[in-house]
Image: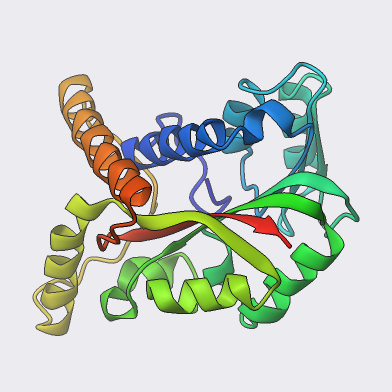
Length: 248
């Protein structure tokens, strides 16, 4: 979770579903069996880093990199990581077996230079990079402005960004297909000035147990569609786009 969104104890079902889907991809391609040094770029509150560490070998270690860490935040994250996590505010020199770059590139003015520097500096030869971004610039709305996004990506733009950084795409595709219609409706309401509500906490989730469970099941089913479509090479549009890449 982005530090700008942090502060609510209940994880958003979207975040939980994304985590489960991405870790499944890492397992499918045997990354979790071989990755021992991990860099989580733009790690936020390090929730994903902790979930991933739980699937890795006991000696695996993660560096959480976020420019917005302060001493208190870093200390709390490292303490919760029980010696398996360290925090930094600057890009560390690798080599890392796996770099995760999850919904980060859209926050950076020069995304091409940013990704290139990470690949060159941090990813070891034949190492892995796991990447996600919000999809479709036409859906850019107040929620993106609240999160300080510069852009959303078409699959073509995202692929060109990764290939141009010296990465080979091993698997990729859309994610959260079922969330496209609600986001499109939100965009239309904003264009027609039918909605003036400003986001206050982008990832806050305050719904009850039953609604949370129902949304979680729906997003899990959505993830199955994403997985199967990626395996057969069918590109189905989603609210997000993901890729698992390897450094050439």
